[in-house]
Image (cartoon, rainbow, N blue to C red):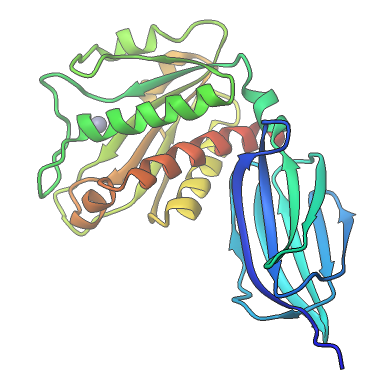
Length: 296
Ligand SMILES: [Zn+2]
């Protein structure tokens, strides 16, 4: 009797493909080469059916890298495992197989739709406070002006990697007025993002919130999508979305004020020390705006 290959691992990451362009890859690993077929049953869904048994955690895998949204693993019958890959956008896919060990089936999704969206797009990133204005302070020692500076740098880097033209409104120790910050928004600017943290007297309050320009069409939808990405990706609780009158000076242009955490809460302050948190925040913001544009 021939042993059925067992699938032992599933992972996703962004990495350069054979031509050097970044791809969103999904890898399925097994103890031996396994037969599989790829189907596209409905828009935004790809289904992998593998002739194997499953020997790993089968809960949903939330990817949210801008192209792959999530992967659902099911065992419809003995000797078959199905992977339902839900995408954020339609894109090209091709597969590669490695004999192993471990044997590996890799789905490679092009990230071109995301790059195409951001290429040449002007985004103004505004790190709140600065200089003599520290903003809120965490219970240990972090200042809002410094943590939002870190997030801004990471966000700017992520946007530039996708080909966007990024303008940061201040130098590390400057504190321009709100008017000066908003003056960086030109006619060809797509988005203004001001980064802050929330602060509360009640030290138990924690979480992220997204404020939007009430004069921009669909601003509430955009804020909701960005907050959804942030909470899903960072596991920070959401404190909701609300209109922000200060952003109305942008006219009908999209503007967001993101309160990334509540710095006065000791858990949230601790999270700010993790460099991956700033990266996840940046990716979530980038994906939220892309998702909004996809919805038309
Ligand atoms: Zn602030």
